[in-house]
Image (spheres, one colour):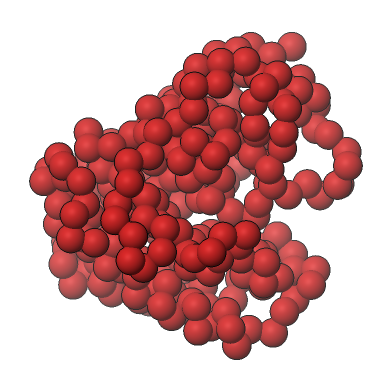
Length: 282
């Protein structure tokens, strides 16, 4: 990972810390995943010891390099309990995004680390440690103003990510969470009528799909979720040339009390963004 692309110097230390933290957590999770007993019908609310251990690995690496920074993370581990949860320099961490995918052992989970500087996302890293329909684990990362990059496999060089040029929703590939009622379309999906739908338990993976140009739009209509669910993936899409808002076009804000997000999420290649918002208002 010596060549991380040009223009990374503004947040070079933060990027290196995030990449190293994700690598350490990924190494741990690969082993934990191999030993994990499958839970076929894992509930959406599931959390595991692997979540908590992964989080501490990540946070301890961040604390070592940036001891004064605030930490916002999903699990109530020791490092979160003793530190500040908001501040001008804020790290937002999801140690296993898509724990259901981890518990069901279908590979649909990611490790997400985001860094927010005075309200603006500066760095985002999303790693898929265990392959799911891919030959190797996948890493996608971005730095504000320096683009989005991907590495697929241990010996690969970074490649620039770019969103698609699809301008017609009828030709679009949409990615969303796995449906609680397979075969039954939501009213939003019915309104958008995409050509293809990809489903995954991990928001990080879905945002990476859009950033990589493997999907055109990601729709999340949950009434409430948290900063750690989307922060790291948000910057991947925007730095790849796309757009990210709430489902009505709202600007997403990070670092609010209790890290709540209540506007839903629409991430796209930008070209179909306004059309998607318009159709969902109908």
